[in-house]
Length: 417
Image (cartoon, rainbow, N blue to C red; front, side):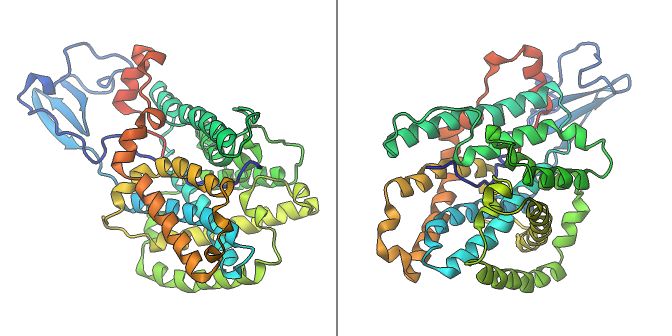
């Protein structure tokens, strides 16, 4: 079994964003920080005399001349939670359609269309929420516990699952060669570490595109850390870094929603034509052009062409994302759980030959598979599943960090999206 392709997303929000407790009453001594002089690194470092800030739950208490002013933290944006949930549903559907492509040109067209934008959309969102990353101790701690540690845990878990389910007891554990879905975690780790660099260079998106083009024509990069994917998907992360809220407002207008209809229709028609003629491995971005049996120059052309197509379809996807709270908005905080956990079922379906059932390759079977994939990923994003697997996805690991780093992380380090 070859190392798989594909993403989502890993975007998961900080614990407590939706159910955080209210602060203590202002008159209570517990609502104020302990008396101590301001330090260069403390929350009161930049405050005038007589003013200090206490972080408590989702609220910030600013005390000026003994009069506290409670300012609620910025609420979560339902639009992005909705986008993450819908993108992860498309990820699961794409995995479910993969074995059906040989018997259904329609399934192949849907597969190509979805693969053009679902991972780029996830990565753009990840980049957008990485704009504040500054490599401070608190944020580094959150990056380790929220990305690096889950990568190690799930890489090992997937390896043992493959040994058992595929009857391959000698399959090695390799933290340098991500298997199946874990590539996204290692890519997010690398991308986020480079965020301070992208914030200071000129023309960051063209520079990232140039790096992606060079990767696409470089067959000697190898498989370590799935570096081809890290580099070829990099422009979408950098694009997210440079986007501003007003850019998302543009695609949330009624005109954009209407325009997205013919654009998606044209994309589906093109995908239907291209399905029997095009190697879908281009969309995985895990190989160079030469490794796909194409001339080197085609890697540069395909990288630029697919980036343009992906950006257009990502914009159309965002145009259709609901802006208001819906029944699935809260599930957007658990998309990384669904992403990593559904991989066991997706791979198990191949190991155990579920797709050998002929009726699954009929129109009714394809619809059933699609609905089952959506239901599975939805259930895996729910709060009970998050609570059950939080030890692996969001470990505290206080024992591994100095007390100062833990306190800084508790004050401000946001969990990677």
